[in-house]
Length: 151
Image: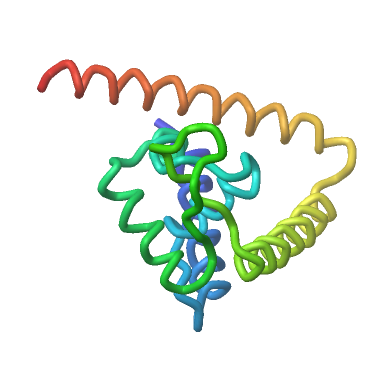
């Protein structure tokens, strides 16, 4: 049985993790903290509950991530404009700057990666990656649902 695709995806995953470690060196950011910042960048100010759901983590976990990001000046908690009981988490100017830099790095890497693939193969590559993502999302989602049902 060939496992070349899985082996190659694992290699890519490992390389991306090493690159993130390098990019976050000297900062208080981790992959999990950056995921919170990325979610806020895409969705705007959010409650911790919405962040936890978006990242598939517990309320306790998101609270710790937000605490650390707030301590380092990347986010701040502000009152919700229409629900006096709720608190929103939003990016600070420091967080916005960090995310703008991260988006620039992503765009640069996107261009580099597109540049190493023959133009006539780009559509097929994207379709293949999309199919893998869809399959993994479905299979991991159903596995999680089964595991929760076993509890």
